Length: 255
Image 1: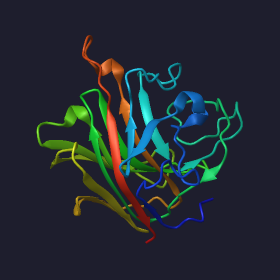
Image 2: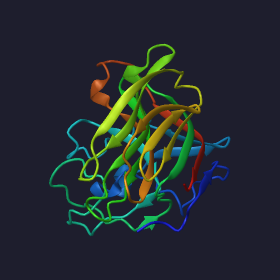
Image 3: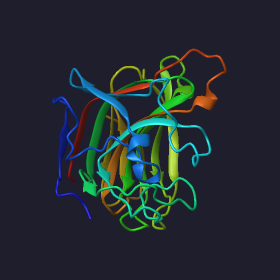
Protein backbone atom coordinates (compact mmCIF):
# COMPACT_ATOMS: atom_id res chain seq x y z
CA UNK A 1 0.00 0.00 0.00
CA UNK A 2 1.12 3.57 -0.59
CA UNK A 3 -0.31 7.01 -1.05
CA UNK A 4 -1.10 8.30 -4.52
CA UNK A 5 0.88 11.42 -3.66
CA UNK A 6 4.28 11.27 -5.39
CA UNK A 7 5.65 14.69 -4.38
CA UNK A 8 5.61 16.89 -1.32
CA UNK A 9 6.53 20.56 -1.04
CA UNK A 10 5.59 21.48 2.51
CA UNK A 11 6.26 25.09 3.52
CA UNK A 12 3.77 25.31 6.40
CA UNK A 13 2.04 28.33 4.85
CA UNK A 14 -1.40 27.69 6.30
CA UNK A 15 -2.67 28.09 9.85
CA UNK A 16 -2.67 24.35 10.57
CA UNK A 17 -1.20 21.05 9.43
CA UNK A 18 -2.69 19.48 6.31
CA UNK A 19 -4.84 16.60 7.67
CA UNK A 20 -4.51 14.79 4.34
CA UNK A 21 -0.77 14.47 4.97
CA UNK A 22 0.07 14.80 8.66
CA UNK A 23 -0.88 13.00 11.85
CA UNK A 24 0.24 15.00 14.94
CA UNK A 25 0.49 11.96 17.23
CA UNK A 26 3.42 9.65 17.98
CA UNK A 27 2.60 5.97 17.37
CA UNK A 28 -0.81 6.48 18.93
CA UNK A 29 -1.78 2.83 18.45
CA UNK A 30 0.54 1.82 21.31
CA UNK A 31 -1.09 4.37 23.62
CA UNK A 32 -3.88 6.69 22.43
CA UNK A 33 -4.25 9.93 20.51
CA UNK A 34 -5.03 11.77 23.72
CA UNK A 35 -1.80 10.64 25.39
CA UNK A 36 0.50 10.86 22.35
CA UNK A 37 -0.51 14.27 20.97
CA UNK A 38 2.33 16.53 19.88
CA UNK A 39 2.70 20.07 21.17
CA UNK A 40 2.94 22.07 17.96
CA UNK A 41 2.11 25.34 16.27
CA UNK A 42 2.66 26.97 12.90
CA UNK A 43 4.16 30.43 13.14
CA UNK A 44 5.90 32.65 10.58
CA UNK A 45 5.93 29.84 8.01
CA UNK A 46 7.53 27.35 10.40
CA UNK A 47 6.32 24.22 12.09
CA UNK A 48 7.39 24.38 15.73
CA UNK A 49 7.33 21.20 17.78
CA UNK A 50 8.07 21.56 21.47
CA UNK A 51 7.94 19.69 24.78
CA UNK A 52 6.88 22.03 27.60
CA UNK A 53 7.69 20.98 31.19
CA UNK A 54 4.11 19.90 31.91
CA UNK A 55 3.80 17.59 28.89
CA UNK A 56 3.14 14.05 30.19
CA UNK A 57 5.29 11.01 29.54
CA UNK A 58 4.64 8.85 26.50
CA UNK A 59 3.61 5.23 27.22
CA UNK A 60 4.70 5.49 30.87
CA UNK A 61 3.64 1.92 31.68
CA UNK A 62 5.37 0.37 28.67
CA UNK A 63 8.43 2.41 27.68
CA UNK A 64 11.32 1.46 29.97
CA UNK A 65 13.02 4.84 30.04
CA UNK A 66 10.90 7.89 30.87
CA UNK A 67 10.19 9.61 27.55
CA UNK A 68 8.28 12.65 26.39
CA UNK A 69 7.86 13.34 22.68
CA UNK A 70 6.26 15.67 20.14
CA UNK A 71 6.25 14.11 16.70
CA UNK A 72 4.29 14.28 13.46
CA UNK A 73 4.08 11.49 10.91
CA UNK A 74 2.88 11.27 7.33
CA UNK A 75 0.89 8.04 7.64
CA UNK A 76 -1.14 6.12 10.19
CA UNK A 77 -2.62 2.67 10.51
CA UNK A 78 -3.04 -0.19 12.97
CA UNK A 79 -4.92 -3.38 13.61
CA UNK A 80 -7.85 -3.41 16.03
CA UNK A 81 -7.38 -2.86 19.76
CA UNK A 82 -5.87 -5.95 21.35
CA UNK A 83 -4.05 -7.06 18.19
CA UNK A 84 -0.25 -7.01 17.77
CA UNK A 85 -0.42 -5.29 14.38
CA UNK A 86 1.05 -1.79 14.34
CA UNK A 87 4.13 0.00 13.01
CA UNK A 88 7.30 0.58 15.02
CA UNK A 89 6.86 -1.67 18.06
CA UNK A 90 9.45 -0.69 20.67
CA UNK A 91 9.37 -3.92 22.70
CA UNK A 92 8.14 -7.50 22.40
CA UNK A 93 4.55 -8.35 23.15
CA UNK A 94 2.98 -4.98 22.44
CA UNK A 95 -0.74 -4.90 21.73
CA UNK A 96 -2.69 -2.11 20.09
CA UNK A 97 -4.33 0.06 22.74
CA UNK A 98 -6.38 2.25 20.39
CA UNK A 99 -7.12 1.37 16.78
CA UNK A 100 -5.99 4.10 14.38
CA UNK A 101 -7.66 5.18 11.14
CA UNK A 102 -5.68 4.38 8.02
CA UNK A 103 -4.05 7.36 6.33
CA UNK A 104 -1.35 7.07 3.67
CA UNK A 105 -0.65 10.81 3.57
CA UNK A 106 2.79 10.70 1.97
CA UNK A 107 4.66 7.41 1.74
CA UNK A 108 7.54 7.70 -0.75
CA UNK A 109 9.22 4.68 -2.30
CA UNK A 110 12.65 6.00 -3.30
CA UNK A 111 13.47 9.52 -4.41
CA UNK A 112 14.98 12.61 -2.80
CA UNK A 113 13.86 13.93 0.59
CA UNK A 114 15.13 17.17 2.09
CA UNK A 115 14.24 18.96 5.30
CA UNK A 116 15.33 22.35 6.58
CA UNK A 117 15.27 22.39 10.36
CA UNK A 118 16.85 23.70 13.54
CA UNK A 119 16.50 22.72 17.17
CA UNK A 120 16.99 23.90 20.69
CA UNK A 121 18.00 20.90 22.80
CA UNK A 122 19.93 20.20 26.00
CA UNK A 123 21.87 17.16 27.21
CA UNK A 124 18.62 15.31 28.00
CA UNK A 125 16.86 15.83 24.67
CA UNK A 126 17.27 15.12 20.96
CA UNK A 127 15.64 15.67 17.57
CA UNK A 128 15.30 13.50 14.49
CA UNK A 129 13.92 13.12 10.99
CA UNK A 130 13.55 9.58 9.70
CA UNK A 131 11.62 7.37 7.29
CA UNK A 132 10.02 4.20 8.60
CA UNK A 133 8.54 1.29 6.67
CA UNK A 134 4.75 1.40 6.78
CA UNK A 135 4.61 -2.20 8.10
CA UNK A 136 1.41 -3.16 6.34
CA UNK A 137 3.47 -6.35 6.09
CA UNK A 138 5.65 -7.19 9.08
CA UNK A 139 8.96 -7.30 7.18
CA UNK A 140 8.46 -3.80 5.70
CA UNK A 141 9.87 -2.35 8.88
CA UNK A 142 13.30 -0.90 8.05
CA UNK A 143 14.16 2.72 8.72
CA UNK A 144 16.24 5.37 7.00
CA UNK A 145 17.43 7.86 9.59
CA UNK A 146 18.17 11.11 7.76
CA UNK A 147 19.38 12.99 10.83
CA UNK A 148 19.36 12.31 14.57
CA UNK A 149 21.11 14.63 17.02
CA UNK A 150 21.36 14.20 20.78
CA UNK A 151 21.97 17.40 22.69
CA UNK A 152 24.63 15.58 24.71
CA UNK A 153 26.76 15.36 21.52
CA UNK A 154 26.74 19.11 20.85
CA UNK A 155 30.00 20.79 21.75
CA UNK A 156 30.30 24.44 20.81
CA UNK A 157 29.95 24.63 17.03
CA UNK A 158 30.08 20.87 16.45
CA UNK A 159 27.57 18.04 16.75
CA UNK A 160 27.35 14.32 16.07
CA UNK A 161 24.71 13.75 13.40
CA UNK A 162 23.38 10.20 13.29
CA UNK A 163 22.47 8.83 9.87
CA UNK A 164 21.98 5.41 8.36
CA UNK A 165 19.71 2.38 8.05
CA UNK A 166 18.11 0.39 10.84
CA UNK A 167 17.23 -3.18 9.91
CA UNK A 168 14.63 -3.95 12.58
CA UNK A 169 12.46 -6.82 11.28
CA UNK A 170 13.49 -6.67 7.61
CA UNK A 171 15.67 -9.70 6.79
CA UNK A 172 16.77 -8.14 3.50
CA UNK A 173 18.57 -5.27 5.28
CA UNK A 174 21.65 -5.07 7.47
CA UNK A 175 22.13 -2.64 10.32
CA UNK A 176 24.28 0.29 9.18
CA UNK A 177 24.00 3.38 11.36
CA UNK A 178 26.75 5.79 12.38
CA UNK A 179 27.29 9.30 13.68
CA UNK A 180 29.27 11.87 11.72
CA UNK A 181 30.79 14.77 13.63
CA UNK A 182 30.15 17.99 11.76
CA UNK A 183 30.94 21.62 12.32
CA UNK A 184 27.44 23.06 12.52
CA UNK A 185 25.23 24.96 14.92
CA UNK A 186 22.08 22.86 15.28
CA UNK A 187 20.24 25.91 16.69
CA UNK A 188 20.54 27.49 13.23
CA UNK A 189 18.82 26.22 10.09
CA UNK A 190 20.54 23.46 8.12
CA UNK A 191 19.44 21.20 5.26
CA UNK A 192 19.42 17.43 5.79
CA UNK A 193 18.65 15.18 2.82
CA UNK A 194 18.80 11.73 1.29
CA UNK A 195 18.87 10.37 -2.23
CA UNK A 196 17.27 6.91 -2.11
CA UNK A 197 17.72 4.74 -5.20
CA UNK A 198 17.13 1.09 -6.05
CA UNK A 199 20.65 0.22 -4.86
CA UNK A 200 21.76 2.73 -2.23
CA UNK A 201 21.00 5.67 0.04
CA UNK A 202 23.21 8.77 0.14
CA UNK A 203 23.00 11.20 3.07
CA UNK A 204 23.61 14.94 2.73
CA UNK A 205 24.00 17.85 5.13
CA UNK A 206 23.92 21.34 3.63
CA UNK A 207 24.37 19.90 0.14
CA UNK A 208 27.48 17.87 0.97
CA UNK A 209 27.38 14.07 0.79
CA UNK A 210 28.32 12.66 4.20
CA UNK A 211 27.57 8.93 3.91
CA UNK A 212 26.55 6.42 1.25
CA UNK A 213 25.13 3.01 2.10
CA UNK A 214 24.96 0.33 -0.57
CA UNK A 215 21.53 -1.08 0.29
CA UNK A 216 18.00 0.14 -0.19
CA UNK A 217 14.67 -0.63 1.53
CA UNK A 218 12.24 -1.72 -1.18
CA UNK A 219 8.82 -0.53 0.05
CA UNK A 220 6.94 2.66 0.89
CA UNK A 221 8.01 4.55 4.00
CA UNK A 222 6.34 7.20 6.13
CA UNK A 223 8.01 10.39 7.31
CA UNK A 224 8.60 11.01 11.02
CA UNK A 225 9.67 14.40 12.43
CA UNK A 226 10.11 14.64 16.16
CA UNK A 227 11.72 16.04 19.24
CA UNK A 228 12.32 13.84 22.28
CA UNK A 229 13.01 14.46 25.95
CA UNK A 230 14.47 12.01 28.49
CA UNK A 231 13.68 13.56 31.87
CA UNK A 232 15.65 11.00 33.89
CA UNK A 233 18.84 12.17 32.15
CA UNK A 234 18.40 15.72 33.43
CA UNK A 235 20.19 16.52 36.69
CA UNK A 236 17.97 16.69 39.75
CA UNK A 237 17.08 20.28 40.50
CA UNK A 238 18.00 21.48 37.01
CA UNK A 239 15.87 24.37 35.76
CA UNK A 240 12.91 23.56 33.54
CA UNK A 241 13.78 23.30 29.86
CA UNK A 242 11.55 23.21 26.77
CA UNK A 243 13.14 21.43 23.77
CA UNK A 244 11.95 22.85 20.45
CA UNK A 245 12.31 21.78 16.83
CA UNK A 246 11.50 24.21 13.99
CA UNK A 247 10.95 23.07 10.40
CA UNK A 248 10.88 25.63 7.59
CA UNK A 249 10.63 23.40 4.52
CA UNK A 250 10.24 19.75 3.63
CA UNK A 251 10.45 18.55 0.07
CA UNK A 252 10.05 15.10 -1.43
CA UNK A 253 10.31 14.12 -5.09
CA UNK A 254 10.36 10.75 -6.88
CA UNK A 255 13.51 9.19 -8.27
